Length: 269
Image 1 (tube, rainbow, N blue to C red):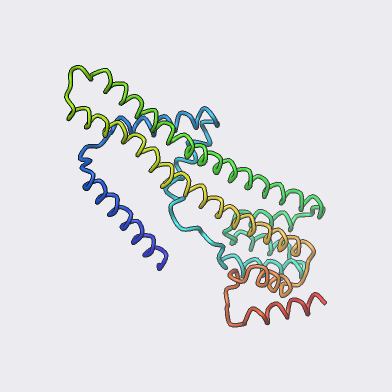
Image 2 (cartoon, rainbow, N blue to C red; image 1 turned 120 degrees about the horizontal axis):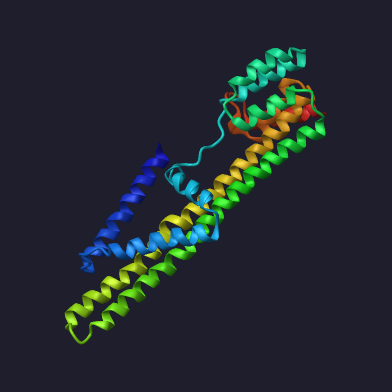
């Protein structure tokens, strides 16, 4: 809640400063053709540089990228430990039925693979392949956003050049007032390109990089937990490992972190 309030205040302050700057400079008009040139040209260049499918898929998910990063929670913590307890006792069927309660798709799929009769090396390769696939998808989205951030100012400058060419073509028919208005109107295309690149595409690329890093770290933690499940290790040991590796995954915070780490070291010893 506090982050949302800070974000709303920051957005309100930025918009207020932009409106005051707009009024103080006397920019009463909106260069709609320049804006369409920047947005359309950026989209077209991104589609040419990448496949149309990933670009359209990313544009559909843009509203969700503006929201806060979804951090891993403890929703699947207790069901996973319950599955580990059943599997350790030999109740494979009950463990498979309990696996449907896991919400995380990666953890749910890995748990089902661990419960099936697979070789440990094969299980590890399948899990690592899914991590590499997720990493490649995130890297592709980041490359597309960085591409858009590069092309948006370029097409803004292109719109300015178009406006300057049109202005120079009418020098003999118009006065200085029209020339000044036309010059300001043309330069707004560059303004649009800079604003879109530095307030939308580049910040989203940075945020997606941070979200991808957290997601991959969480998935690697789940791989270790799934391999411990496959090896039929004690659920207490699995729980202590998950708590020590990622303390915010633990549903109960009644024990200090130091005691969890000491308990894990003692069990491993």
